[in-house]
Amino acid sequence: MQTFHRGRYSRAVPALDPESLPRHLDRLYRAAWALCGSPHEAEDLVQETFARVLARPRTLRGQDELAYLMTVLRNTFLTERRTASRRPRASAAVLEELDPLDPRSGERPAEALQTREVFAAIAGLPERYRLALVACDVVGLSHREAARMLDTKEATIATRLFRARQFVVHALESSSPGREDAPSARSLTPGSTT
Image (cartoon, rainbow, N blue to C red; front, side, top):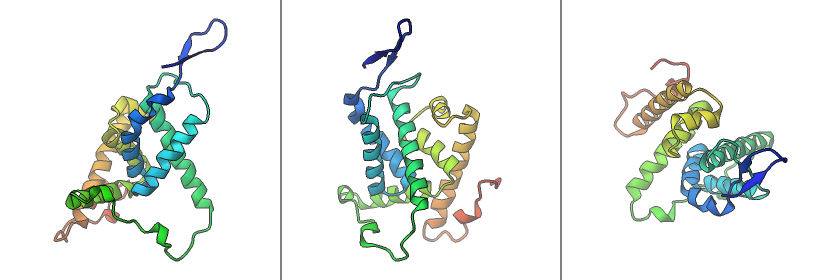
């Protein structure tokens, strides 16, 4: 890890090592997929995140590399979402927007379908629950690291995680065939107590 010295009497501030980025690729991709809901958008998001990080030297102030990269990924996702909301939308589906099958999942199609359903359920969560779930369950950050990254309290992360997991379970139960008695994912609002 490189260090930068700021000023004459200040201590060294660790810098993000560009060579360490490939080590975090899988976790960032899983987090991006959960945020976006699409594997192709996730790849684009991770690429954009890496491009932003590599554009100039980055210093790590009290964070480890993964927490810093997750913060950049989240900020990039939110920026792209805001930018996209300002653009006019096309009314007809374009061929490029269709989600083709992932060629890597050809050996295990049932597992690929299940993974796709879980990530779609996560992508459908309200943002505050989705970010907590992605940080802890997909990326593997501790509650403390997630709280620091999302600028909230650990107890808030625990609560949001519990509710997010409930939403995902209910969404998956309601989408599975033969489960008409399960509550629909739309009936679960962030303010509901179920």
